[in-house]
Amino acid sequence: MQVGSRSLLSGNEAIARGAVEAGVLVAVGYPGTPSTEILESIADRVDMEVRWSPNEKVALDVALGASLGGARALVTMKHVGLNVASDTYMTAAYTGVGAGLVIVVADDPGMHSSQNEQDTRAYARMGGVPLLEPSDASEAKEYTAIAFAISEEFDTPVLVRTTTRVSHNRGVVEVGSRADRPATGFVRDPAKYVMIPGHARARRPVLLERLERLTDYVEASPLTIESGDDAGFGVVTSGIAHHYVREVLPDARILKLGMSYPLPMNRIRAFSESVDRLFVVEELDPHVEDAILAAGIAVEGGTFFSRVGELSPDAVRGGFATAGILPAQPSAEAAPPTVARPPVLCPGCSHAPPFLVLKRIGAVVTGDIGCYTLAALEPLAAMDTCVAMGSSIGMAVGLAASGGAEGPVVATIGDSTFLHGGIPGLADAVYSQANITVLILDNGTVAMTGGQEHPGTGVTLQGSDTTPVNLMALCEALGVRDVRVVDPYDLAATYTALESAIAHVGPSVVITNRPCVEAPTKIRDRPFQVISEACTACQGCMTLGCPSIVWSEETYEGRRKVVIDPVTCTGCTVCVQLCPPLAIVAVPDREDAASV
Ligand SMILES: Cc1ncc(C[n+]2csc(CCOP(=O)(O)OP(=O)(O)O)c2C)c(N)n1
Image (tube, rainbow, N blue to C red; front, side, top):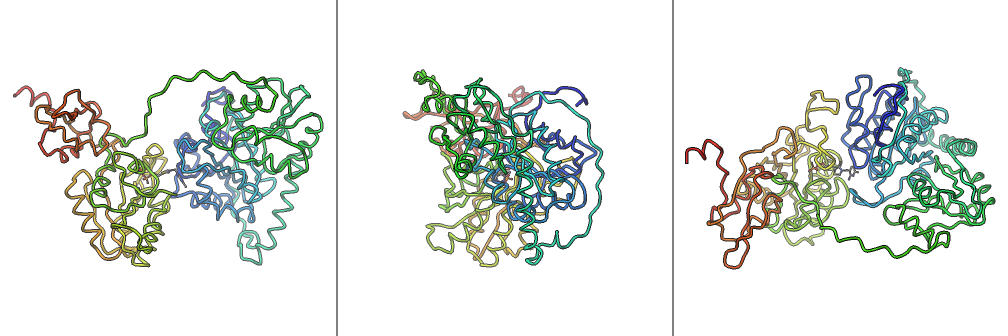
């Protein structure tokens, strides 16, 4: 990226660029949509340590440590990641920082790829930590730099909150030069950094006094921008919602909040006094609206703008129409129906076969979060719970303790998720000698978020080789007496492994060993085909849910036969094992074909 140029960057790339220009030396995080590309876009920097951590709490710990060492540090995660990191987060607000520490949290209104919808602004208030909300890529870069400056001026971590649209939309960004900020070194200060009660009690008033100074800062700050001249009504807004309001009401008076915690309430009050009606348009929780109401200022918002899911220009237009600001909207012409395309596991995905087996065994399956969660859907439909990363194992322990499960209890968890939050659950299974089996689906990557490295892969985010965590040795070291590795493409072997593990009294672990089909070292082999004359339309192969197996036009005794798409088939052989009449065979390669 050329200094002085104008580049088209996504919000995530702009945040990364902001961190580069701010002289950040350590950038760390855990993947999670929509935040993942922030670190990936600067992985090739030789002047920064850019790292994946096993989970968000470790990432924040690393960033805090780096900051105390005097290096500016960036940490990135998705909204639920801050739940994981919240223990460190809440007390980091007490310790303050060494060099600047910025925590970027990407919210996912609408749950495009998340297990819940939550509003990070609530964490700002809970922790007493300032929060900036960029509304586009240009601000994403600018606010990241401002966040580092605030962090150092006020001795506090600073949150930068994006949402999916801000993280993923592209905009023009001016590329600046990188500040040279060598680490200033660790300065011992136990009263500030050792949070025993006696020290922490003294830090709480520091935090509150800091918030007062931050409030003075935001009242005077250019981060709060007033625009428009139509005095009839005014709109307080922030983040992407600001652009929706601008699009729908180009001339409206708008008070745009760049910092939405703490709030510039004097500015808001003055703004409210200059208009007849005051509205708030914000995505997710009524964070600003409630604060304005609590300050005794009349405001409207939640009645007109949904708290559920994402806002959009249409939603904002509809809200202002209901409020009588815009003419009533003509009912929209019904959009043509779209074809439903539910997400599916990839052709040849090594996660699918073990779930077929678990279904056959009649296991009660506590699931976890990753690609394999798709096994909850038809036709596999073999997962009974999925709550939060790492929860599968503890929930299995509890389910087994309840005695309420009809069938063996099996926790299924991916390799990254196991390293993220599964290890303490397995320690508990050992500690309580729970009668559960843990199936670790080790595909050697964080597939769900696009194939990132993790501590089990032996490669860092910046591409160097490192020591991989040995999952089998780890499970054994935790005290699991029955640990076995199985090839998930071998259905019979997977069945035997799971049956034997389930029969073991006490916790047992089965680890699968096939790489993700999207991995560069993939398993792609010769594709398979169906010999139509031999197919008896038993449809057993369809229970696998493989997208390469599709319905044929031909039938047998009134049932539809199947065909295999040779382009997407990876040759994993699992469907072959599900075909009693042996109608599925490898497509002959050219040499075989020539010799026939
Ligand atoms: C607390 C939290 N952090 C991050 C995510 C995003 N995320 C969902 S699943 C997942 C990991 C998936 O990797 P793995 O367990 O190895 O399973 P795979 O997708 O490879 O099958 C991540 C990072 C999340 N949902 N929750």
